[in-house]
Image 1 (cartoon, rainbow, N blue to C red):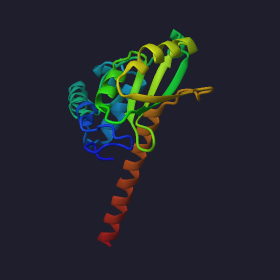
Image 2: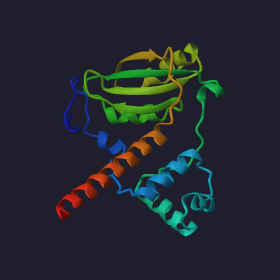
Image 3: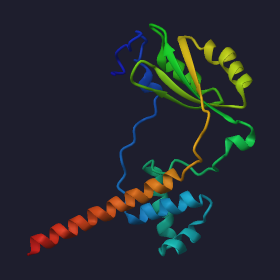
Amino acid sequence: MSPAAPNSNGASLSRVRQVAASPVAAAPLDELDLALLKELISDGRASQRTLAATLRVSAPTIGERMARLERSGVITGYSAQINWTAVGFTETVFLSVTASEGSDVAAMMSQLWEIPEVEDVNMVTGNLDLLVRIRVRDNNHLRTLLLDRIWQIPGTQGTSTMTTVAEMPSKPFAHDLITQIQADHSHQAAESRRAAGANDR
């Protein structure tokens, strides 16, 4: 769907580029980068000295790698992982939003994003316009949020809420995906060595 063209409802998408996250080019990562990322995923508070000892490189090397990973957009920050159920936000709600004809979808996205309970806002393909993930305490909290905030956003033609009934436990997604990337690197290196050996014969 072209950002400059109207969607099925005729809503304007021309300004979505202004509010959407900018794409980031894939950064070249070597084995040390991947190993460093895994350590930081396991303990984001680890000191550079500790990371250096674990990975058997110098602390300045760790500092330089971390700075490069930050500059390239691979590392976007260091923060605690919160179990929202433990702080009273027990419900995860997926909200689909349909925009009315001629509405400013970028403005709708911005206003949704500013609501504290909104975890993420996504423009999606298909019959919907936006898919939003929300954290709420209970059904009354959701009702208030819909009536007082979300349905007050200009251009909102309709919404549909999907409340989670059961969730899988949080998985170590980042750790597992980095492990898969490491395996892919090892496989590619082995294939390169095999091809080089065949060429030498």
